[in-house]
Length: 253
Ligand code: PGA
Image 1 (cartoon, rainbow, N blue to C red):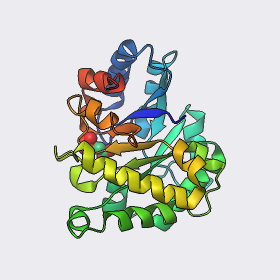
Image 2 (tube, rainbow, N blue to C red; image 1 turned 90 degrees about the vertical axis):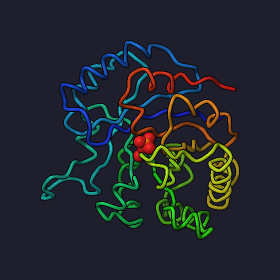
Image 3 (cartoon, rainbow, N blue to C red; image 1 turned 45 degrees about the horizontal axis):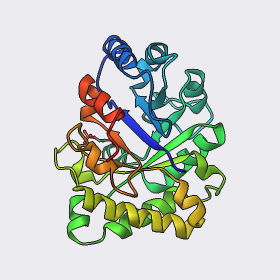
């Protein structure tokens, strides 16, 4: 049985003091969850320790937004897996389109990070998704196939138990233009088929595949009602208390 993962990606928002306050308010709202739902928030690195404290004793899990692919050493400005683990981080988001587009991370680097994180015992949220031109050219399935094949290269079937895929069409991120549930579901079905080819149907059926891109409290229930959509990776709406609480406690329709 696969699980839902409702996750907040706070990006480069909230100072440590703001993050601490917001996480405490969220923690007060989320004391219990359906048994097949996980909730995770990913603050920036500087806020991890505060947020860890604020969510202690609640079902909310801690995530990070990025990680370096080396053990340790002369990598100025970078953060290692051990540093994240030491702060109680359970999930790391890798391959977000902002990392790919702004910081030029390619599938090969993302794959190194994915393998390194898994070897360290972190759970990975691997983000994939097409740009508008790619969707308009009708090549969405090819784009996500390449991102999955290269991003998951040499990731074992066993390790897939610790991998979540986040499908985030780039044209829907931060734009208010959510993919309709039907458009999202069609690509999620393609993703499930690609995972079946890579790992077989048993494993592919168990992988949580989140949707991301302008998810809000208004559209979450209809997105989650789709057969192959198992959660959400939420940017903008994860910075608003009431909407994110509603997203975490979405209604199963
Ligand atoms: P958004 O961001 O919800 O603001 O569109 C989603 C994301 O980038 O993960």
